[in-house]
Amino acid sequence: MDQINALKGYGKVTHLELQLEDQLPPPSKPNFKIPNHKSLRLTIAISAVVLTTLLIGLIIAASIYNSTGKKSPNSADAINIVCNVTRYPNSCFTSIISLNSSPEPDPELILKLSLQVSLNELSNLSRSLKTLTANGGGEALKDCESQIEDAISLVNDSTAEMGSGAGEKTLTESKIGNIQTWMSSAMTDQESCLDGLEEMDSTSFREVKTRMRKSNEYVSNCLAIVANIHVILEKFEMPLH
Image (cartoon, rainbow, N blue to C red; front, top):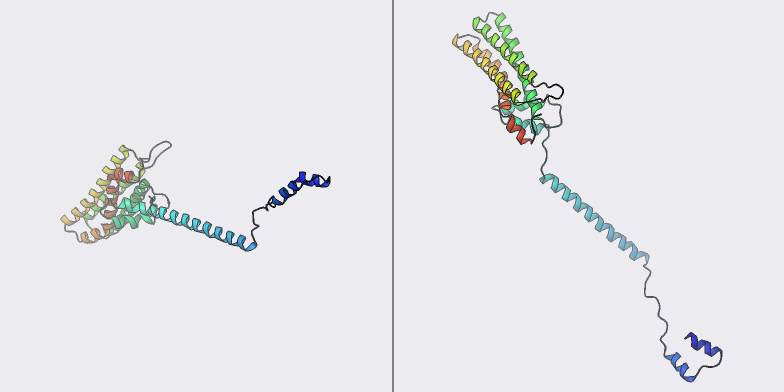
């Protein structure tokens, strides 16, 4: 085309060349459209809806996973699990939960707290027996008082056994065996106290039995926890530490 124009300028264009020029198609225009503001706003709105839907889907999926996935027990759950091995799970839970300050589940700490609860209640019982003895309770009551003092000493020994120095485990097989033996003896002391009062037909028998109910339950709970400590630790997937 440029060549034809050039020839025109020199007056040398033939009739055939002019026909060829008339047959050439017109130059094509670019085939694209500039989006107007309305379509641009629509595109942005659709993208925002899709993104919001995806975010909601992710939140729902995370929620479902959290509700169905395996969840570690908190400290209250842990106390429930431990106390379920005892004969008195309700008194076990209510006596320990108020003393527990650790947010993490720790069966060995729960055993320590159970020992502390037993010691506190036996000390209360001992004070009551001293008052009864001072008011002329007889020899059987004096023997009972002595047996409860022995039980207190055994629980103290058990609590001290769970103490650990630098690099020492809180519980070992040897410690578990000692605590189990001592807590069993503490149970026997309480039973012997009541048996002696009943045999002597002491007027204090029923009162002492009533006052001993809590300490008897708490010592029984300790004994059950330490006797089942391996099973309990397996439930928490924890080693002795």
